Image 1 (spheres, rainbow, N blue to C red):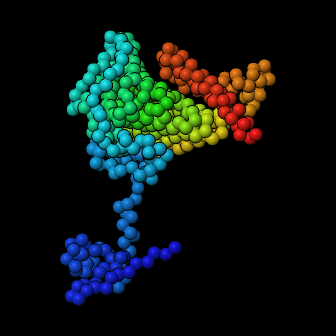
Image 2: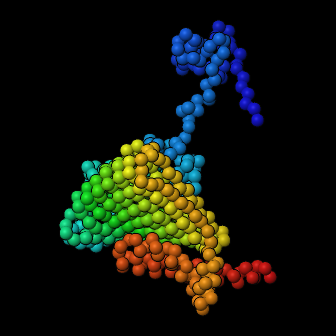
Image 3: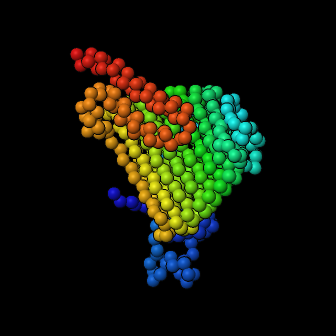
Length: 445
């Protein structure tokens, strides 16, 4: 293929139009004048009768290549409309997400149920609360739309007491209207506790969750997506971890039609530590996405990322993108990320993309890993050879695969509930397969 261009014939008294490769000052073009030669002006666009190529202006059109280069803003207009060609949107079903990208969301307060200990507090704050922006700013249009639309901020505080504080927030009344939400979770200095955000029911929701872990604090945050089958949920979660502080962040995605949770952690103080876990189970036609980011921006920080998922049913699709940045100030960093996907049936798709940026060589270690595969036939054979039926053997293998992450939460009641939910997912999958078989036989007949 070749590219051709033609220059129009100038009218009487007008200068000829510039050649496509010739740099032109906008003012000169507007006045119908030929652009002045750069020779002798130190610009190097013309020398010995030869003109330099403009390179098509690609020096200003190169897309963002790394997570650390993405623009950040709370202004919706700072982000162009999403086309699906962007690296962070290329897998997502945009038709279902479009209502959350156009703005005009309802960001008012919503009903919730909270269970908490004395050292944990939850209350509504104003949209201009000074805590807003403490942990980060939106990096994409969905997050900016929710940021712009917020009318109230849900403030969760874990206080510094001698006890291990806990708070569980259940949200189940969002309805089907396009909504926005904003939550700020703060762990005071040397506080210890766990915060669980339990999402249920129907929703068309885009939200921002900010997590601030003060110096010396130890906090666990669990984001549980147990939505109804019609729910569409986009959650952007930012965390700022202080000096010698620790954050355990867990994402559990089981229900919903489209679920996209993007957690990022900034380790911006010496000795900051994070462990980020995820477990997900995608059924037929379900889309689950996680984009995880760990930014080692200080010395002697530690990061661990471990996400595991299972897929069953036609059209089940999961996406995991893991980004780790070790900055120039990240001396002594110890970081590792991995993603594992277990494919249970045909017709599924798991996209897994780990990325690692290192800007200093003085680190303890860094690595990443990704794997997607079906059942291990040897494991099934081993269990069946000991008298365990095939369906029970499959259940044990899946549970053993996912329970490793579930048990990292550290809340026994919640862990038991999640294990039961995974077992129900497996049971529903078996029921769907059995129900489809007679139809298939009838069609063959």
